[in-house]
Amino acid sequence: MTTPDVSHIDEIVDQAAATAAGVAGVVAIWGVGSGLVVDPILTAQEGSTVYVRPGLPTNVVTGTLVASVTRCRLTHRSATASILEWEIALRHYIAANDAPTAHRLAVPLFVRYTTAFGANTMLGASVNSALLEQFQFFEDVGWEKQGISWYGIEMTLTAIERLDLELQAGAGTWPP
Image (cartoon, rainbow, N blue to C red; front, side, top):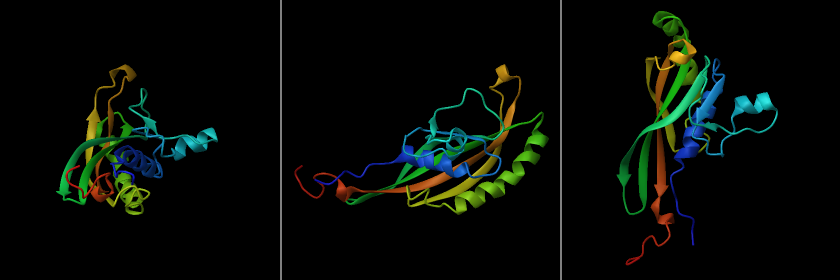
């Protein structure tokens, strides 16, 4: 019996975070925590292998990047394959006293992220293709306990994942 082909979205999100870890200015990454993708920043700091952490950080610092899934579309379905189009939000936090300062600090990040993801369009071979499609500034005022408003850039990464259904147990036989 062959192994069913299932989505690897947890690994895809963590791989996107790990790719972002190579961008100058990123100091911490957060993803799904699949246990499959090494966090290069923490691994270098700890001196031993550390995997991408799940969830949201309790304390954000400038340069924190959080990756999460925001949407999935089934763009193709046939008897032999399905193609999933995942939208992954990447949020890079920047501490600043005002929006103009945050914008000035964020602008160089556009080129850095475009370069990093352009060099890794398959996210370590976890997807068929991945493309940064949108950049926008954000202000996150939900951190009152830290006494600061957080600004940053949010990027939309679209990752295309193909699932080969003929690898599914019982595929091509009817009745099942």
